[in-house]
Length: 320
Image 1 (cartoon, rainbow, N blue to C red):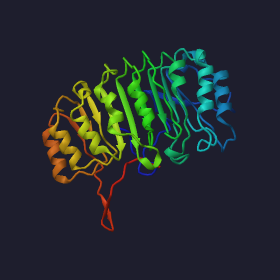
Image 2 (cartoon, helix red, strand yellow):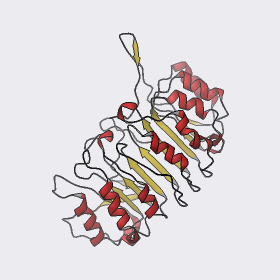
Image 3 (cartoon, helix red, strand yellow):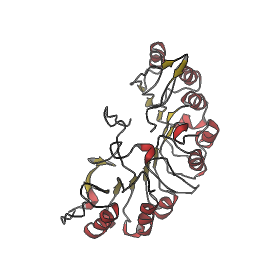
Image 4 (cartoon, helix red, strand yellow):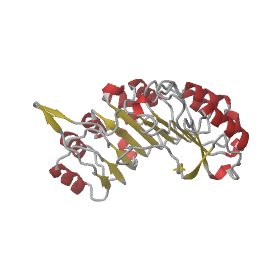
């Protein structure tokens, strides 16, 4: 489950740890070398208060760090990230791919809401990263505006995560059209339509079939306005039988979606079912818990729908 901060929300700066490694930030003004880059995750970002941009941070990384040994890289804020896309950064990484033969984990856009709201972050086509780093095992991207992906085959990728307040349906379809034989962990924060989240259940069909994802063990289809429809589709999805964990959290799940889950294929083989941030009644919470006694079920953050002039309002956990 993604940690939730009561002030910053679902915060992702990865200042302390990433991919199980301590994070070291490369600061251009400092001359200190990183003694053992193979044992840390390196983070670079623009720091407006310190008056340097992300290009300078990247140059410092190339000069001061033995990049051949770097296993994990975190890209934080870039200057004007709410007006300038990540295309330039993607290009820098692609152009220097040969200098990072040990890179296995990459996070693009580790930017918390105090720096830029998730739907303000301007992303770009991230396909070149998968093409330039065939040995990459983990790719995570935060921000859905301008995000694009083309179908590719990638032999090494084990984890793919898109954190957005609105994930374009074209990206979801591209994920479903990719051949990812090693992928074990897939998280898609689908978001809401106001912020570009236009995915339908039909767009998810190739993922739910699991045909191109033979190694998948965790599936997260989260933060959705159509969480009930997704739950109903998941209830009959072939991929579920081989999963160890399933996340339908952060969205607008109601009793109808939970009823569909309970009435579908067995879920008792799961180790974990994440439904946190939901709109279930107390009675349904009890039913889900009782139906899955051997499963670690997260039903935290029980929300209440709001009524205004006869209309019922629910909300996803992450949107703007």
